[in-house]
Length: 110
Image (cartoon, rainbow, N blue to C red):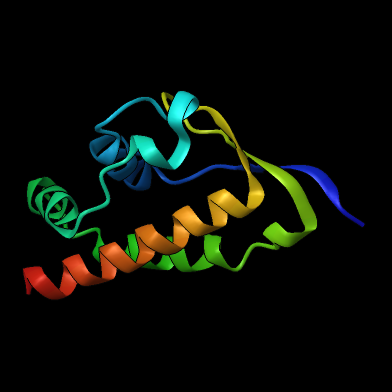
């Protein structure tokens, strides 16, 4: 059974990371194209956070990646300031890119 929509919420630290990376446009308008997911951008965010959030961020991304996006048509990013509706496949790919960039950023910052 395909669900029409899956709502996604994230932790406050993941929201801050996403807001930091929302550089080119708004998520509501441009979806993944609104975000700068280069390692340098993510390293900069890890460096400005006063507490090391890397383990929590990586765990949350891993949990999100396990969601059954193939079972739904669209995803609603239910995050203050980032509210947006995505095609499920596009959101899944975005999460994969974000997770890969965050992993590389962590290796670069150590």
